[in-house]
Length: 120
Image 1 (cartoon, rainbow, N blue to C red):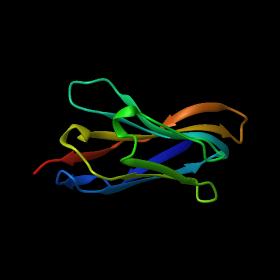
Image 2 (image 1 turned 45 degrees about the vertical axis):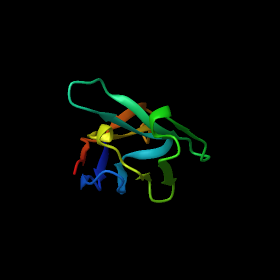
Image 3 (image 1 turned 90 degrees about the vertical axis):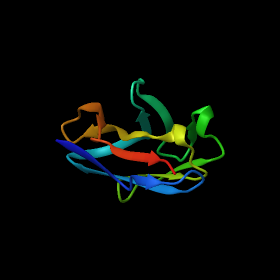
Image 4 (image 1 turned 30 degrees about the vertical axis):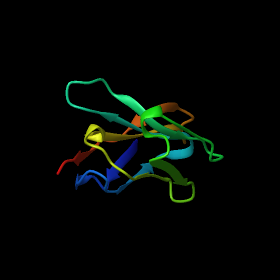
């Protein structure tokens, strides 16, 4: 089994910052892409940012210049630094990882999410 656990969500005022973390554990042989998604109330889940094993990144237009994704391959962790937060960033943020297990099974795994609320 593979588990992803997010942390770092909370309540922040507009213009503030938060740093989300996600740790992967379990029967992991290797991890390919890792990413952050979010789902706001009444909306579909959307991609926020993704990072490859080599460090290449891609961002949603709505967060470019404000959010930064990074990863620590040795610790099996991915981070999302969120600056200049806006009320429209309010959502549950989910970590995702493309994992190859020791049983040679490849799949996408998800965390349970962490709530980010941007409000004054």
